[in-house]
Amino acid sequence: MSESTPLSESTPRDRLGAYLDGRLTPDEEAAFEAYAASDDALLEASAEGVTDLLAPLGEVACPPEVLAAARAGIRRAAPDRASRRGGRFRTLRVRVGIVALLAIAASAAVWVATDVEPEVQIADVRPLPEALPPAPLDDAPPLPEADPEPTATDPAPATPVARGARPAPPPRRAVPSRPAPASRTPPEAVAPPPDLAMADSVAAAREEVLLALAIVADAQGQAASAVADGVGRVSDALHSTPTLLSPQTP
Amino acid sequence: MTRLLLVALLALAATTAHAQTTSIDVGALDTYFQEEAKVEVNLKGSLLRLLVEASREDEPEFAEMISGLTAVTVRVYPLASAGNDLIPELGRLGDTLEDAGWSTLLRVRGDDEDPGDVWIYVLDDGEVFNGLTVMATDPEEDDAAFVVIDGQIDPAQIGRLSSRFGGVDLNEVGQ
View 1: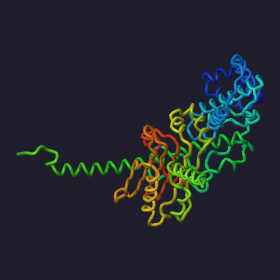
View 2 (view 1 turned 30 degrees about the horizontal axis):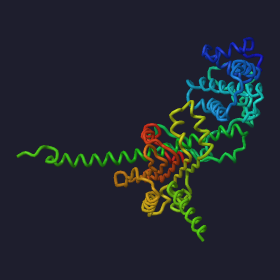
View 3 (view 1 turned 180 degrees about the vertical axis):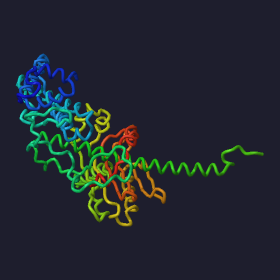
View 4 (view 1 turned 135 degrees about the vertical axis):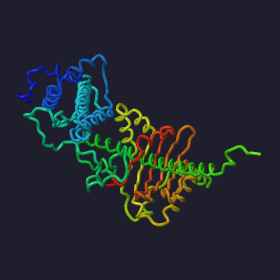
């Protein structure tokens, strides 16, 4: 936890509420994200609070798919991806990542509180500083204890193996929506921890399905173009034979 | 002897049932090309289900679209590495599919203006398709793409694909 962050004197829960409500200024948001990324206590306190809220619900078994979705949200909030998608969505994505992590923490806390055997071990959940390194926001104040260096557990890029072998050539035609490269290393060959491997696999699978759909759509477009050309030729032929279109004149 | 005949008949029935739902043998596609596939996708089982769950909140339409799929297979080859008889061979593959119960949804034969060939086959089960196979060649882009989608697909959803996912550049994808 950083002693010199602007938020060191504020109440984490108050800041968390204001952050989630969008009531912080951009500078305050950036500072809070840096603060949250370096303070496990905030996460634990928030998890306790959520646990209290969930206590009346009794035993809740969080399915692994929920954890996977939350982790996918964290991955989408990672700085390397967010920076590519523009600054406008960066804060939102980081916020989604923090909320997702809080959800994981809350689920884990419920498991612990109710002695329910978890389907996914809590050890699979990475601490916040690793899962969400502070984003190098353009307008953010200096972060004293932010560690920009990648760690061994940083998420591997979702980019499939084939990408990056050589620079991609410029597109030969307009591409309104293009999935990322699809070839990838099978999940079994991925070295990162299981939760990261799962998130990577899901991200890669999404790109692969989009690729398949794109090829189908492309084939459909190609076919539609051919059909349109054929219809055009028939139409031209019909118009060139007026006796077929106009009533027979006596 | 009777028991042997019964077992043989059951085996034949099982083989026939399997043939009716099996699309092209993507592994055999390698024989048509001198070079390896530049894109290979083999998705099935739990990973697909996990993707559905992971997408359900953020992309509900996408999640619904893929929720009935059981496998997605893609191969993209450089068309220039194919032999001269590729188109007739793919035509024969299409005939095999039709013999196995697949319906030809679309067949476009290339010409001078649009030299690409397209085959789209579906396993038609009335309201939904239980499978989709696409074979497409694009000489301008030097691609031969094959997609096999197993599972339930709504035709209406397929119709929406063009506007949402069309325009993929396979040459860039394959790098």
